[in-house]
Structure formats: structure tokens, C-alpha cells
Image 1 (cartoon, rainbow, N blue to C red):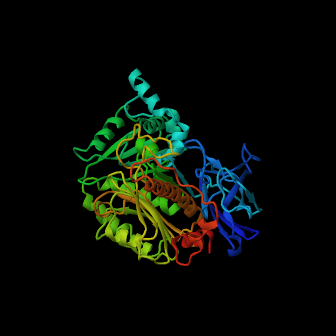
Image 2: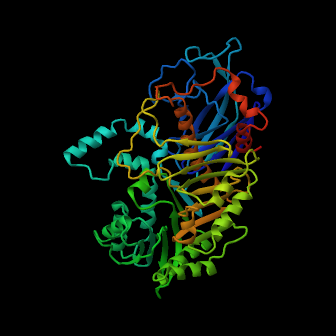
Image 3: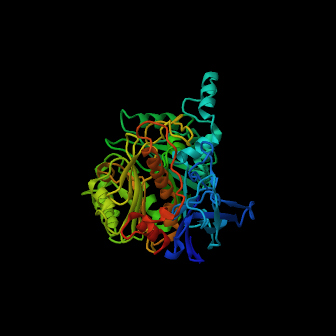
Length: 566
């Protein structure tokens, strides 16, 4: 859902996701003088908190602040000095109204400081819209994961001490965070997976699961419960020899065993990297008719569901369900020969030149999927927004980054296995690298924790969004890592969805959450390169912060124009 409102020389364009709303601002040139930023007032219009109003908050203040570490400030006191801001404290299926007030300094003041807040707010546009729910053809949900680690530290300030005390007392498992922390990190993702499995009610239902890492007892319990209800279950799982993930799969699948389940180990020299579920009804002759598919990037592990940024995408589109159902059957039929799997995909999963809604699979020959995706990215007219993990094929990297100083807005993050977050800031010429954690000596920030985190991957979402700020957006999302192995060797799946504004907005809001988080911490980290404690960035005391946004050819100008819809 998208909405646009204008008033008093100010405009706001709102993009609505499931658990986030992105607001993009614009002002007429004559409204820039003495502009200190924007104050955003939010009103909840539906649900149990209907009528509640509050000001959105930020972490920055004017120079001379004495705020506490990690403290958030209302934007009517410390305005937002960006032309784009997001609200991630929203709930799905809820209506909200945002009133955007331009904030100005008093004409008698040369520069505003925290101790001299001589500012005033003007009336601005009000935009109303609702977050998206799960009732449509696509239900998409993201966990919070470590991309919100300052928020995590604010909510759980004593977590490390609690974990150590539990460890000494012998009350904490070797891999488990306290439930309150896990629930917050999940942000409903695990709960949605459980409710999906609960849709299968009795022996007239079937669950077909193709899974790379099956390590989370909570989801295993949901599968056991389904089996006890009489649901017919088939599990195709990664079973590569001498592989730790495969060993853990074998262990959990048998402790306890799932009633009414048939297990199919997929033994290959590559990875059975799928993570999808086909939910079907069974007729009197035993035929399966798919009714929903759960896919995405989320492995059934504590890391995947809680500590890594991931997505679950549930589709009830007929063509998508049929393709996944056929693919599961083919994986069973070709379990003895991965070459047969590849030949079937090459023949029966033909790649479209101009996809509208397509479910794709690998392995396939001649890097056909890589070349298609690179061509789709190369056809971008306005923007390319992405979040990826591990090393990409050069064709994909080249397409994502395009040509320096072109007219395409390019923003993305890439999580390498060395735990570094590499980002591209609006253009190929503005690359940055952000650490997973902030430096310990940085003033104004809370200590961040990696307690119970396994491995170095914080961002595991694999999403490429093309022209997402236009009326013809395209989203590519799934398990596929856009790599050589993902194309030619591994069992993989992905969705390509075009022209669906609701799907595009859900992915846009989430990828920008991840991107903005790591871009901001990179900017902050740069101030402390010498290893000395430094103050966090501060707000400008005048309108100089707007200059780059109105400089022809500047990357910030492109950001303002694209997101505001110009």
C-alpha cells in the first residue's frame, strides 16, 4: 500500500510493509530556508490502541546534548534531518496516520543547540495507510534479528549477565537465549511458521518439507504435533556425508520421530539448500492438491529464525503452488541422480523473458538463472535495492552496481562469511564496510552482544528489488544466493514477482531497515577510527544539512527524488 499527501509546500509518500512503514519527504525549494528537519506525529487508527498518538523518535540531538546512552528523543524536540525515515514500531493489519511537520529555527537564532532549542513546527501533510496482513495471496514476514541490535540492547540490558548466571546454575541450554529474547527477535516469524503447519488438521492434509537445516526443536515439535493429528508428512532433507548440518538433521528428525512421516535423505556432493513447505489437501484417491507454499531464506535453526535477518514468504498463488509441488515430487523421483534433477528443471522450469509471477529452481545448466537475473537488474530504470549473503557471481555484482554516477539509485548490503557487512551507498562510487558490532568505546551507544550467536552471518536475506519506487516494481527472493553453486550445483528455489506493489513495499521496507542500520553505524564508526571515544553524530543547527539533497547530480538528491516519487 502506498499513499501520497501534500500540504504547505511539503509532501510525504508512504510505503507500507508488514512490520514497517517508510516515509519519504520532499519540500519546495522556498521551504528550505532555516529548515531543521521533520517532526513526525503518529496516530493509531485501528486495533486495541486506536486513538493513541505519539511522536516518532530518533537517536541524534543538536550539539551540546547531555542525553543518556541509547536514549531516544522525540522528533518534535530533535527533528529528523533526512528526507526518508521509517517506523518499525508498527503492527501488521493496523491503520496509522502520520502528520509530517517541517521544523524551523527561530529567525533570531544563528544556530540551534541542545541547550537553546528555539524551534517551531509548521503544519504539514497527513497521510493515512494500513500495514499489510496475512490475508492475501502473499503473506511475508521478517524477523527482527541483529539488524536491530541497539534496540535489542535497550530492551535486554542485562542479558549477558543473565546468561552467565543461568550457565553457572545449569539452567540454560548450550544454544538457547532466554525465551523473552527469542520471542522479541522472532517478531512473529516462528509463530507464523507454526500456525502454517497447524493449518494441516487431520489425515486429509499433507505436509511436504524440503529443508537444508532442520535443527530447531520448537519447529520439530510442531511437525510432531501435525503427525499426531494424522497429517501425512514427507521430509526431504540435506544429508550430505561428513556434514555437520546433515548430522544435526538426522539427530533431530529422530528425537522424537514424527508420526505418519516418511523421511527422504538427499545425499549429493552439493547442498540440498531448499527451505520450503508445500501444504496440500488429500482426496479419497490419495491425490495431493496444494493450497499454500511456505518459502524464503529461513533455515529451521535458532540462528535462522532469531539471530540472522531472514524472511518467510507464504504464497497461495495457484501457479506458484503447483510449481513447488511438482518440484518436491521431482526431488523425490530424482533422489539418486542430481543430473536427472537438473535435466528436469532445464526442461520443465523454463525461465521467462519477462516474468510476472514465477517460481524458479536449480540446479540448472549454463548459469541460465544467473544470466536472467543479471539481465533483469540491468534493465532497471529507477533503482536497485538489495540484501544478499556470501559471494555473488560477478555477473550479478556487476549488474547490481551498474555504472558509476548513472541515474539508477543503488543501495544494498552484502554479508560476507568473515562477518563484515559490505554496503553500496546510493552508487557504485560510494562503497562502505560496516562491522557487525559497534566499537565498545563509542559514546552514546549501548554495548551490543553476540551472546549465543553461532557463526558470522548476521544478514541472511537474499532479496533484489528492482524499480521498487515505481509502479512497475520487481522482487526476487528465496534461498538462492546468486552464486555459481546456487545455479549449477545446489537444490535452490526463488520467486520473481513483478507489478505487485504490496509485495514490493513489504520487501522495500525491510531491506531499507537492514541497509539504513548498517549504513548509519558505518558513519558513526568512522568518527572513532583512532580508537578514541567520540560523540555520536549530531544534528546540524541550521539548514546546511539540506544542501546535498538539492545539489544537482548528488547521490542524496537522487535518494530524495526516487523515494518521494519524482
